Image 1: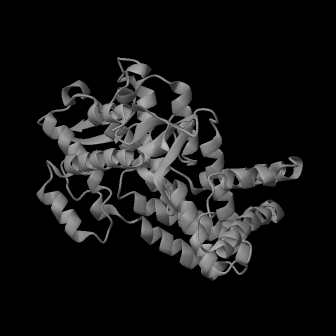
Image 2: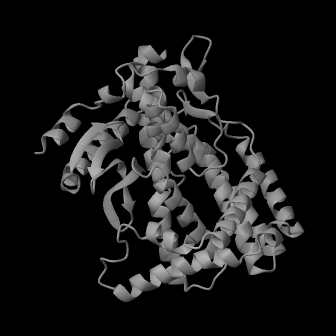
Length: 407
């Protein structure tokens, strides 16, 4: 076995290169313990998670992004060739036996970008009926979110806390039904649908990102160092993983309740073992195996470039090797690729594409960044603990979440 890989697996975190004494300043600045009358920690909140949000934060960010991209398309002569190189750099759609479909996938993705170029952004976003639909949706979403405090990242004393508060889908259904009734043109309906679905998802995903930050600290520091007992730390693990149980997974919820002290740690360290196995299976892809940064991330050399790989999330649904979370030689590459994928998604709403290809491209794009950017919360915490401000700021920008409020 590759010696560096063996070291990476045996030594859980080899962080000497980043400083021997990681700081808890960020942890104490962000997380707050809620105690009962007996002094036991019953909840952990995140002070950087705002309790208030506005749907218009996303609307304004999306409008600004689209206008900026249109300006780049107009003024940068090699915009589309650069975009094509970034989107298909790793040879995606080249290895399939169905080369005809591969070319069609590429064509439709690029056509979607050309579609963005032709959109009348101001006309779409200034439509009074669209604004009415968005405002009604915001009211509904906020009323449902009141039942689930957005700043709670772990509820240690309630094994069903998150499971019984999974209500966001009700607001999405309300918003989509209203949009279909009120909006008569396809561009406006597509714009409203995108906003309605994405806003609920992004608001909910902030918690997951911050929970992954907390997982880093729970795993790397002794409970008493954080101000917790071992049982409190174990319950925090369990609450985080309980929050990820889907609304239809009744039996999984029951299992979490029955095994509350060990449910979370069992899930976390099972993920650790799977990550180690992933690194072992893929070791031949990498010139060197570097430092293990967190339970989910490792420094490696790939094609003579130093990168950080994500051992929890594969590159895409058709690329089963670890995804690249950061390229040291091209610091903006991952972020830019995600931006382009997002633009393709927007553009597909405004051009005619057969349902099979549209659904497949949508699934592919989601598989390239949806989970990956949330797992990166632990990587943010690593850089925060090691006081690497520029790196942690890059991680935040890669989330592509306008509701993210941490600095």
